[in-house]
Length: 416
Image 1 (cartoon, helix red, strand yellow):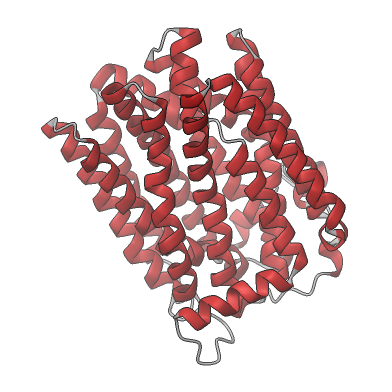
Image 2: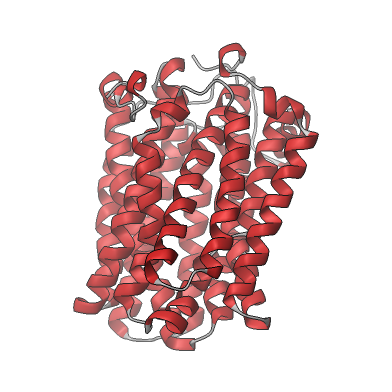
C-alpha cells in the first residue's frame, strides 16, 4: 500500500530483505512478550490482590531499563550492533524459558517472578538502542518514517492479539503455556538477527563505550531542542497517565475479575493502535512530526481521563482504543524526529535515551498509578494523571518553538 493513499506504507518490506526478516521476527517475539506481560500481571494479582504489587512489576522493569538502556546506547555506538542484539535476544529467550520453569514448579514466589522480569528487561534494554538504529541503516532515508510506522504497527498488533490470546491460554492451559510460547517466538527473532549484515556504527572515530560516551549523548539531547522537547512530551504522557497497573483493579471492581475480560483492556488499546497504524501513511508523510506528537500526546491524556470516568464496558474499551490510536501516532512522530535529527555516530546513545523513556517511563508510570490508587482509588489515579499529562504537554508546546516547527523536508540527518 502506498503512502499516497494515507494507508500504511509497506514499501520498506519490499526494499530490504534484511528489514523484512527483522520485522517478521520482531513482530512474532512482540506477540509472545505481550502474552507474558499479561501472564505476569495475572500471576502477581492472583498472589497478592494488590494494585501496589501489580504496580511494582513496572518498577522491576524500569530500574534495569534505565541502567542497562544507558549502557546499551553507549555500546551500540562502539561495537557491531548486530552482535550486541544477537546476544541480548538470546538472553531474553532464556529468561522466558525460566519463567515457564517457575510456573511448572509452582513456586509462586514474588521475588523469583520479579527477578526474572528484571533480568529479561535488562537484556531488552542492552539491545534495544542498537535495534532501534536498524531501520535507518537498512532503509533509504525516504522510507525510514514508513519503516518506523511498520514496526509500531506490528507492536500494536501484538498488543491486540497477545493479551486476548494470553487470557484465553491462561484460562485453558495455565501460565506455563504463555511463558513457553514467548520463549519459542524469541528463537524466530534470533534467526532474523543472525541473518543481518555487519552493522558497525558509522563515523565512530575511535569511540569507546563509557561514561564520557554517555555524557556526549546526553549533551546532544540537551542541545537539540527538538529531541529534548519530544522526550519531554513522552515523559509527561508515560509518568503521569499510564493505566496498565490499574487494569486488574478496574476489572475486579466493575466487571467481575475474569482473565478473559482483563485481556480485553490492553487489546482495546491495540485496536486503536492498529487503526492508527493502518492509516500511518498520513503520519509518516507529515512534514512537522513535532506538532503531530503534541496533539497526539494531549489526546492520550484526555482519553485516559475518560477511561477513569467510564462505567459500561463499551465506554471503557472505547476510551482505551482512542488512547491506543493517540499513542501510535505519537510514537511514530517521535521516532521520525529523533532518528532524522541525530547523526549515526550518536544514534545508539540517543536511541537508548528514547528507549529508556519509552519503556521505563511507562513502567514508572504504572508504579505511580498503583501507589496513587492504593492511597485513593483507580478512577482518581486515572483522571488526575490524564489531566496532568495534558497540562504538561501544553507547557512544552508553548515553550519549545523548534519542536513545533521542525520539518522533515529540511532536516539534515545523516541517514545514508
